[in-house]
Length: 169
Image 1 (cartoon, one colour):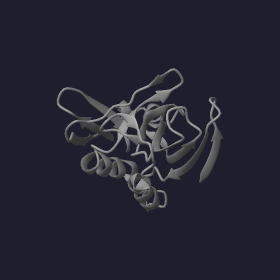
Image 2 (cartoon, rainbow, N blue to C red):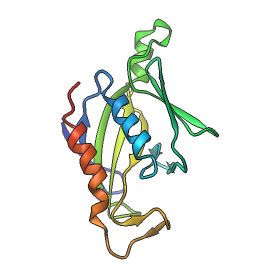
Image 3 (cartoon, helix red, strand yellow):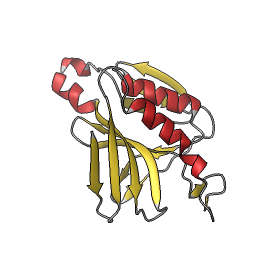
């Protein structure tokens, strides 16, 4: 499913959904955080707060009761990406689990003209995490805007989107 959304700031986001059944989201995130952890920034992004976290070393990844844990040693986070038992409460388990995952491209942003990413929502429609892929407009090594865009930097997002939007369950 492709969705176009006009955001409150006037930017436009195009969302391409990823199947969320089975372990699809867990496999996608495991590949992303085990092989490309240095290339992405992530965190919740809601009106009034944007967490742009970058890892400085490869995290340890574990799965337990449907939760993927990304552990840096000093801190960690959990995402419910697969079936979870929630003490036998099916309604609570459904609220916690990823209910929607979508790759997005947002045009007209305030920091850069376009951003590329992946966003997850839980069963209540609340955002769980946004993951930002390398931007042709931004050099994260120097934390500066590029004079000229480097379009090769969209390759990782394009590869993941091409493989996971139509991913088999």
